[in-house]
Length: 460
Image 1 (cartoon, one colour):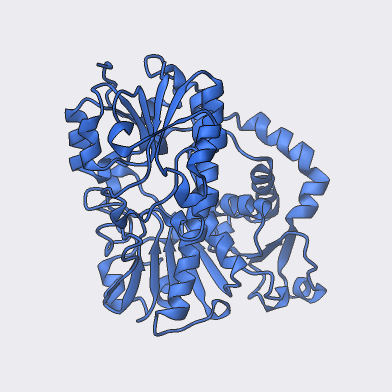
Image 2 (image 1 turned 90 degrees about the horizontal axis):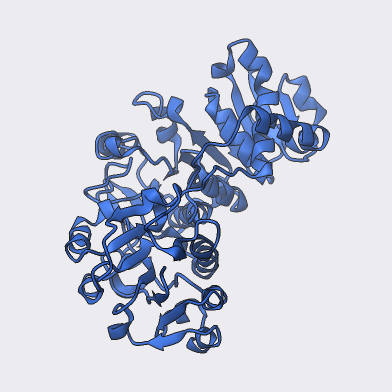
């Protein structure tokens, strides 16, 4: 069992140049949960001060303060938000478990050093749900999408359907994801500030909204509309029961420790700002056309933020829209491109959705590209000009008149404290909840097995 736990401060490290990452992996209230469970918790001096948690608060939670020189020594488990500094690795005893955002394939030199010193590495980003858990609002959105799309699916014509979504809500997020799985001809999201009658529509159009008033004239033009709130009110309970009956949960779900929605929000917010303040285009949000690649948790965060900022038009692209020819008209009109499409390992560095040729020949000069996936030279994203992630010390670069940003740790852009609190609760739940990582790695559940990226090694 992990009884001696060290909570490390974020310092200069391969993914934290300038020590600008100030989040802490556990806040005092979650440290209290560990000390109440009988663990000795040692907190590095000043570990939480960057996000507003004092040394005194940790001491009141039962922790012992330690200097950086002592924190890594003689511990069963070291908890840290991001990966360690290179010079901290030899300080740990062989067999010590390190629980952090490891990003093992992005930093091969550090990975080799951790293996050399026989450190058991548990990668937070690889822990998954077991079984899969889906929120009710998401499922209601799925079912509302199937209900609204059924006429086109039945006639085999959904590839000619133009879907328009007015605003953003949790149910609409589910609607977007499900409709995109059906591969319509297009899907565009508009903020609520755009009147429904200004949305481009025709007899191959479906307008989805959440409780808005839709002018009768829009129906007279041949546009089909659907209110996801009305669907939820009328059929919600039956729809949820039916979905769960015919779609049993997968044994493993998505990431369990994450702030993916906030990542998308932060990236979109920064891209909108770059376009308005730094790019020569100088476009306000209500003048911007945004293209979002992908519609998973990160992509939905970007879509959400764009609607909050009042972006006039947001095109959502899935696999049917990102082929070499299909993507061109979207890139040609884009002021801001946001990549939230994470590709499998075997395609990284081989299949680029936004290429160097697009940068030179297709994107308009002054356009902004935000890469929410990022990576490194050994773990590339789908944006070819991005070789390495950018950092807060130098968050964007310009190439061929296009502005690129692929920040390592997007939530540092305005979401630092709130995501620290969110991550802390998730980490504490992994340690003490049903996964019981606190019991060690000798007999771990399936949800944690993918996270053991180095070792396990016997503690010495």
